[in-house]
Image (cartoon, helix red, strand yellow):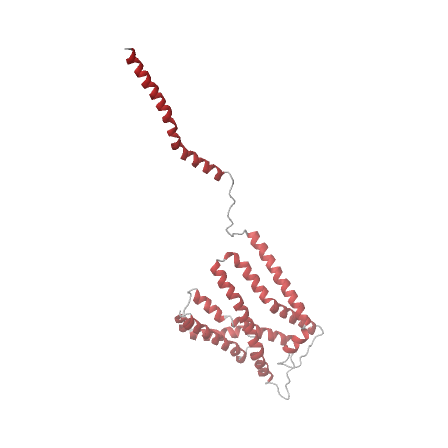
Length: 282
């Protein structure tokens, strides 16, 4: 009887030892939870800074716009100083088509010189102005749009100056000679320096914008807004609109001046059409 009682005590001790040895097996089950908790706590401890998505407040936009306008005005002021320094040379080339000019009021020549210097300063500062405009819109553009705009800005500047040079060296002398041809023995052409300069500005400046037409057509074709079929369909309407626009922007109502602006506009439209059809194949 005593042996039978001792056996259960050994079995009980063994079972107690077995349970004691089985307890550590529960640790691996709790380990993943502990590791996950430890991983979460360090990640949540330091506060994350908000990502900069390139957005700007209205005040920031206005501040940047003011800064870029100031830079443009400084560039125009410096260019005007350079233009005033070379004023004699500039006036010499401006008066070549007309010859000798006159001024009817004591202050007319002085203020005309100032306008010439400011106009020359604006032309000299034009690359800086285009660059500042490009930099202002740059943060809102994607990388592909920045590359495209990086090609458009220099091209637009070159086309603008190309239009000015074409008008000043080819079209303006012919226009001045045409108007001087109405003189005779009883009627002599005496051009006022102020009126002549206004005529030159309003005659030459539109050609700079007209020469941007092929670039505008290429951009619209690249965006898928128009194609060669559309351009060919509205050729007659464009010819009519070219003369209407020339009649609006020319300083004189004569047909000769209007034709001198309308014909290059039509030729540039055809150049844009050929580029879209045969080079871009759209």
